[in-house]
Image 1: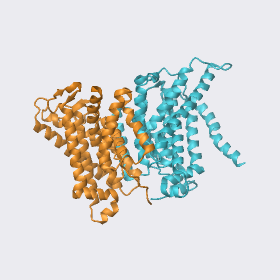
Image 2: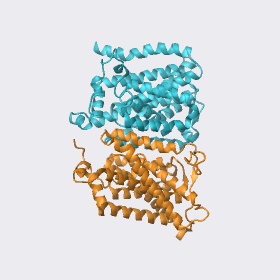
Image 3: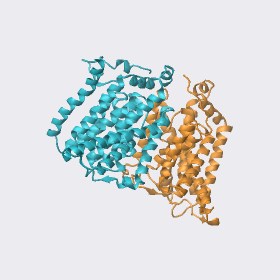
Image 4: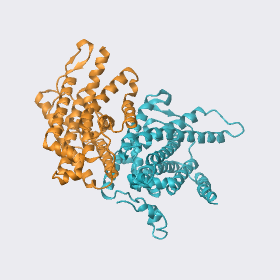
Length: 331
Length: 309
């Protein structure tokens, strides 16, 4: 019965979400839909990065690199299968099946890249991961720009517009369900223990390296998903979409929302994505503001706006229901 | 053989630059156990300070040795001051907090320098500051003379840069191992708390360490600008990562290790890209880093010290 309940708990958001998203996608159109989809992709990125930077207390600053791996894998598959159609179903439906396939392949490729980067660097202390992921982000760009198969600096253009509201919404739900279920599992508890005190966690029998690597691989896979969704939204796959600037955007979202708070990440991703739309004129000041935001936030409120709490921990009415055990910890 | 020698010359000249920057990483890591992400950007600032000074003195029309010295010393001093400022306002207030906090601040400072320098210039300032995103070209500080002994291309820039870099490293070696400041620096690096109890002024040692590392980065920037005059606000990003790799390769926290690591990385890049895959030059440092972390995470000369509670 318990297993059944858990399955239901995991599946319910998808089924409910599908219906709601379907209705939404009928009602929404034009530039707002695109802005919202980009915001959704940013939510996927921020929540998945939160698994590494928030739950586990490691620090990855190369999320865009894994996005690129997923994006190029997915883009290559959809372009290769453009004129192929599964017999017996309409060409639209067949495209969607291939898109799902491409997204999953992108996730797998990004996860493998995550393993390659995470396994050596996560054996050591957190700051190594930061510089290794930063390096990885740059290397991916160099590799793409030098590989004719991947279109070099111009990238792959003319991708089919397969990403729609439902795909992004399902991606967001998948990411959030993953993060929440992970946080409440044995695995998630181990991650939180590593964040609070790695040495103590190890002394208590937590296989720290293995847990860290697994968390990192999961996060990378979802970054790959976000990449696949993004390139099929803007119909263009170039290395410029995945520079370290994109990585830092995600880092800012996670840090601002609160490292360890899923709802905080969602909120920060939404607010920042929408704010970016409004602040198009002052583009050049954007990164400077991000930088100042990071510094000031660390000097004054290093836990981010929500810290490790979720929104409902703050709302007084239903508050104090959950998460309290997580919020406490070493100073 | 000629090609081999040419690569040797190029690799050594790049390697000494890596070594100079790696020293800054390794010294700061030694005393603070923090990867100073902003170090690569201090290097960038050093290049721009030199650029402004050179333009202000009209070096392009009339280069003299005196002006070169002024540029060199001025840029090193300004960057040293910048390093101290960064430490004072961004890292010191957070020293008692979890290390992740300082790491994020370091990334913030790095971004601030990178993108602050990309802003459009302030009008009516006399100099184009901030420089904006377009690359600028560093003027020649002294007249370039090229030789080709036996077909190997070498210029007086290569020689001066190599000699100066080696001179700076010897001076640093002297400072770290022969002076009172060096002794207290090594003491802080070994155990800051105990060093403090023994009467070492820990704050001052850390500030001086930043000054030293940052001025070395400025020197590296000026020496590098001789052979690669293109400077832009993002130039510190890649070079910073590479110099960090050099520091890890030699064993982070270890001063001679950083020198050897820098030289080794410079030569490895030059030979691999020269003989095998030239377009993946920037990937070599990364591959090396992965291998070092897998095989010998403490680096060539580092000793692995397990963390204690």
